[in-house]
Length: 273
Ligand code: FAD
Image (cartoon, rainbow, N blue to C red; front, top):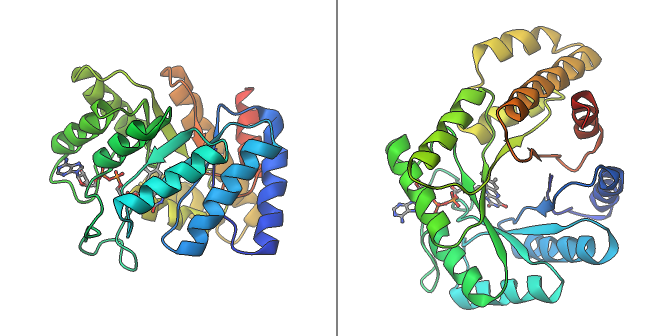
């Protein structure tokens, strides 16, 4: 399950309510994303540290290479270890401001997530995960090249990968097959996000990096003015996706919670997990 670092007292309260409500589901781990600014980065460290110290949950902190020298990255990794966080999702991050803009490496920093994986593994006994892209990363020329880079990140020392959002399970399953064809058998966890409002659906398209399939838009958008109907249909749709993934043998589901618990709890209950 994934959270983002809260931006103030009210968001902090909402986040902690969600954490407490999701704790009884006993997830394998919960993760906290890493933002672009200094204060949001401190909040990732603080939040994962609190999860380690005050809950029964296993925390994972995300870390990006954006605007960080290697010395700063070492420092953050040291803080994670000091707070009791030994699981890190190593992602490169996007250029701040315009995510599609040119990637500019910090003069004393790193260029690819692969190097970040190596750095974290060198620094201690960390379990490291990486990002995977069922539709290919937007900057990659094609899916084959993209999977080659994914496999390199794993060979650099990652123990698992989490897939970016998708709505058609075939894309996820093809990525898993491509990894297997290269002898890469680490767990690939699907990222899933319950679709509760038209805004969440729009965010889904943004994060997935591909347009929302027309069959999904056609099913949900006629309910745009019926919040309860939209939510029920969205939760139902994601329950169906998860059920298919479980049938296909995925080892776990990684929920993007948006710091709320209700929709995730509904999907988990629908699945009888
Ligand atoms: P990389 O693996 O470095 O890949 C970046 C690009 O370079 C790709 O096109 C890749 O194919 C190519 N590439 C990779 N290795 C090489 C190589 N050796 N030579 C040449 N080209 C190469 N962003 C945040 O800011 N904070 C977060 O907390 C966060 N969490 C995320 C969690 C998940 C599960 C996912 C899927 C994404 C997350 N992101 C987050 C977004 C992520 O940072 C962006 O998608 C970013 O553009 C790519 O990160 P990456 O780790 O895949 O980069």
